[in-house]
Length: 387
Image (cartoon, rainbow, N blue to C red; front, side, top):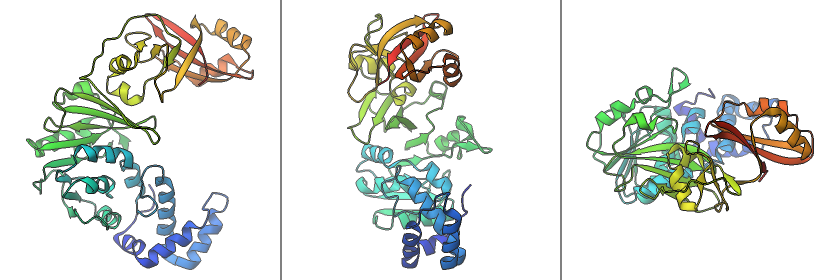
């Protein structure tokens, strides 16, 4: 659960004295090996403030891979877990450039910080007093942001665009039921009927059952699917109902929509197997991605792609052999090839990769990969080089 910050904690941490204390604590390792010794030292110097100082430093260290301003910001554990990564928030903000925007579930301000760069007027509201206090600290240099305490289901502004990020847990568990989000998605839609609305949600939602009238965008960052965003019809691109946005820390983004061609050939496997980015798979744009890059599917019902080249920036598995999936012949072939480190990818078959690896007992030196899937009705294994 993490430390329960108070508004007094936030006020102290945001002061000059708090900044100095945080710098002092940040100079300590705070690793398991020395944590007790470091805590004793911090308690001697800062008394009752020690827990808030240590938690803030540890949260900042965790946040560096997610948020650009991590070293200066304040957090709570829950808020950091829920915060939108900077790269994803920046991408969304660019779609809203030049408009006035109200984030009705603003939390600690991760979304607001990026909106403030490109939008003339930004409002953030939340019901949590501590998170609002933290947001005020985190956004202290943004002059075009107004913060307010307000219920997300009670409209209090006339901003051109409303953004919401409902909490994705119910009864302590992650939920994919739109009606169990907090606030519930149906209630949000009713509260802002007729308004331009963008709702962030889990990529695991069943989009086919959602029957969304606008655009569904699924975004990934550095290979990990981060979120889906529901764009109301007024914010959607004409003719687009699904979009995959593949963001990277080292390459320009790749954006794919269902308005693009999806005609691909039916052919035998090529030289390579490509596992498309998760955003492409979750958005239902596997065929569109294949058409764009000159690939085709191993099987029409399976998301693995194949081709004679690998798209730039993608990981490809060069096929060495193809076999029907039977453990004994596969074990013998791996032994013949002196297989050691073994990566196993599965799709369309009910297999536990770790359990299978234990049964195959690879003890050699050469790394290999197995791609196990279903071709028609046949469980098939592709023995590949490890990329």
